[in-house]
Every structure is written in C-alpha cells, then in structure tokens.
Image 1 (tube, rainbow, N blue to C red):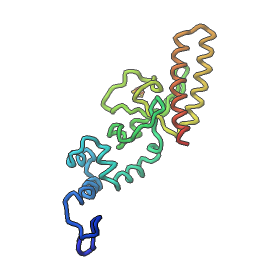
Image 2: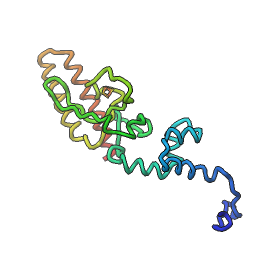
Image 3: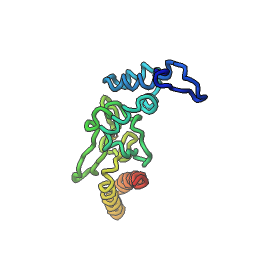
Image 4: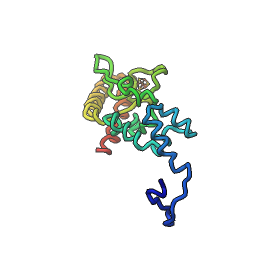
Length: 190
Ligand code: SF4
C-alpha cells in the first residue's frame, strides 16, 4: 500500500512500514465494532480511558459526542469547574438518564436539577445536598433554573436570618454560594 499510494516519510523517502502506524486505526476499529472502551483500553495497555478515547479512537470520540452531545457541551461540578466527560463513570456514558437528577421543589427541600456523577452501584449518603456534593454534575441547559433556585435560596437565607434560625441560614447560604460558582462557570462558556 505504501508503494501503491506512494506514501512518503518526513524526509521525502518512501515510508517504512511499522506496526505502530496502524495502532490508532486498529483501536478505533475495535471500538467501532462494538467492543467496550474498557476492553479496547486494556488491549492497548492504557492506564486511563481518556487516553484511548482522546488519542486513539477519533471516530469513536465523535460518535460519543454525537450521541451524548446534549449533555457533553458543558459539564461542571459543584465548584463551577469544568468536568471532563471521561472522568465520569462508564454508566454515565452508556445511560446518562440513569444519572439524571430532576427533583422539583417541595415545601422543605430545594429543587435539584443536573446529574449525579456517583457510580450507580454506590450509595449516596447525603441525598438532596447535591449542590454542595463533589459528585454533582451541572449542565448548561439548566442555567436559568440554577439562577432562579439561587435567588430563592438567598431569599430563604434572609428570612431565616431575620427569624434567628442560624442552622437554616448556614444551609441556604452554602447552597446559594455553590450555585453562584456553578452559574459563573456556566456563564463563562456562553
Ligand atoms: S448528594 Fe451527591 S451523591 Fe447524592 S444524589 Fe446528589 S450528587 Fe449524587
């Protein structure tokens, strides 16, 4: 093929065949044939999925983007820092809906919208404290909602302050503070 296609190296000579030249193509084919990314990654001897998906499975990365683009556009953690898709559990890639948080307001709790980045086989021990949780995943489509919830929390914080409810002041203030960071992070991508 090198001869037929007259493929040259950087010095202008006919290229010499080396197996590493087809490594990236092979990994991409394996993934596109339906092999799990974990299997492809192990086959390649990579320590991290990110190496496989970012450098060796170009087509597959595009496929992932196409399939999960709506949530991949901008993911942030509760500190407003960007979250890399590859850092999330594999079940998040396969089935983001299973990680979705869509918990409307009730008379006690703050409404929660976004995703939970905790692996599905692990138990959450602080449910409903999502905006202050390291596993929380914020998404840009909920930006207007985050602003509304933050404003409501500030109002509740102020009422609690007026009524001398110190615990609630701290609780509402903390959540509002985290939402400020999330909003700042998301607006930075707009
Ligand atoms: S508190 Fe954290 S671990 Fe629990 S559901 Fe919310 S984001 Fe997930």
